[in-house]
Length: 88
Image (tube, rainbow, N blue to C red; front, side):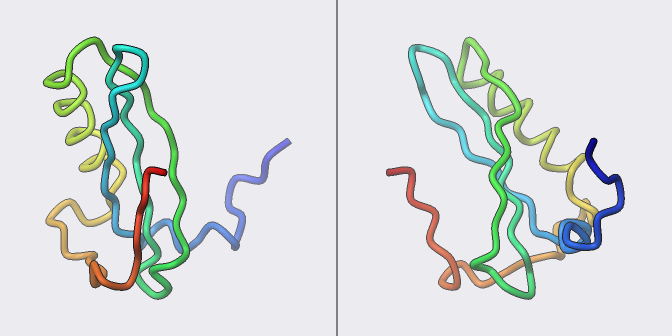
């Protein structure tokens, strides 16, 4: 059984949320990337689904990004040079 309010996951409330879209086996896979604003090397990548077209994937990714972000105005930002997300 998983704890609901695990203190180790508190950073997710203030995390910057980005998304990644990759073509895998003729489907477009969407993942959300949660980046700790206090420690940008601390990330969590969560697959949220796959879609038949890139356009559908983009629509769902943007919607899920806004839903997952605590601050939908996008003010939770980290310096892009502080982390490197490599798909390899």
